[in-house]
Length: 606
Image 1 (cartoon, rainbow, N blue to C red):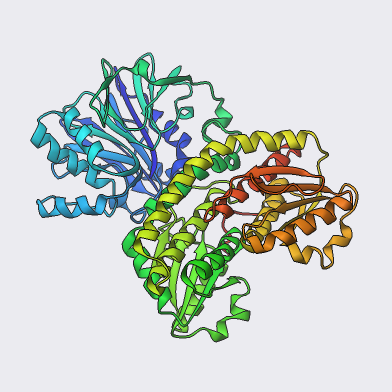
Image 2: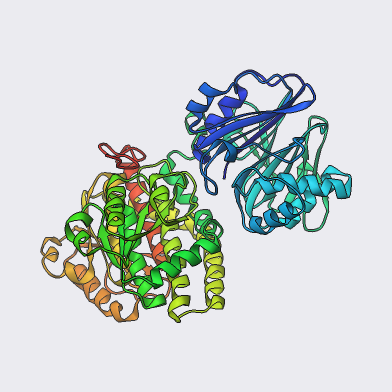
């Protein structure tokens, strides 16, 4: 995964252009950067792992002695952040270079086939197979456009690819579910992962449709639909003015990273199903099935995702799992850990010190570690016996949004797969769940804008508040805790998350006229009577009731209801969306530093 940038100019590429655009794309990946360009009859590659600031000190990406360059900033979703996995990647001949964004689902099959045919693959990334496939299909077709169409037809997943081929006057590309745009400048033509990166370079950007491949050059832009072979012109694509201000360029046009990352949740949810490879899911499930006792160890949003997972494991696999704060693990649980214990350690960054310390102490006592992380190059990945990458992509804002949702889905898949070993599930049921997740991700995309607009309207009609309760029951109880955390982080207001029943055991005494209470309708039928009882009590106290409820949910008492669809397995992800948006919109109205709350960091590493 990462950010793609390509440019073809009438003269040499202007000094500093590549670094400028890669900085604008840094939100798409910060684990490595590089560029490739033709010079003196060969393709020259300049790249290094690490953050772009570090890379530009090691290799010269400022002065490019060529009129054409293909560049990339990498997020390590498959393959550690090391030199050989950093893009661009070459084929066997050195004539073809590729950069990619997204995940190729069936790359292992093609890697095995290509190696049997004599191809030498030097990285552990999925993107590299595309360069070798293009090499193979050009030998068969004798035409680069026909060859790139075959690559697009063969490789499955959610990805975009861009190729530089020695002797070809332009950049070849495939768009298969990950964004690509074409920009037309006065002296250059551009290919990029987003429109804002082209600010000041092109007036108009053409958005490449899914399932389209082709070539861009100064004199021609040739596009084809991969499925039909139909040729397209640029005018067949949707076009937009490149009008973003500099302050929004690195946020893809959004005013804050948090909002951008909320809107990326549907894609992140889908990508989880591609990121977690079957062989590692199988191994992790076997380890869990054979465990004597199992603990989920995490902090913050990751802990809340782990709490959701306990419901999944109980229902889908018949396995009891204990969630524990990593900060408390050494005091409350460590003495019971020994050979036969399994620790499911969860950390978005993979660098959280409490998690790492707990993992190390558990390993010393003989525990097996299953890591769940968004950072495959992290300490958690290194310390784990097996780790599952959630593949949410870089998350810049301190309040976790898309990484939380992706972690919940990753734990759902792990619980379902574990159920195969306990006899509660079948492979067909697991595959059906994957299909359900992918379909639900499309639904999330359709309801996001509606929820955002609705919440903004609700806040316009009510006074802003500084204190609130957020309550849920069953599988929505951890979401109540997560929603309260988001309100603290993004809006900087006091919010307390709790179980619906616990609200009636003391906290209800503070609920009176005008006091805001956010209720989340439980998914479990057995918990809904409690939900209705609490809703009535809040209404009777003249409090402000804000309820997140299913479309078919009952309307008890006075209050404001935000409707969400009822989807059994993804319900926690769905009800988290309005809470994340609510926290964000309140933070905007209060002029809070949303992406960087005071006193907080993305990862607590000390």
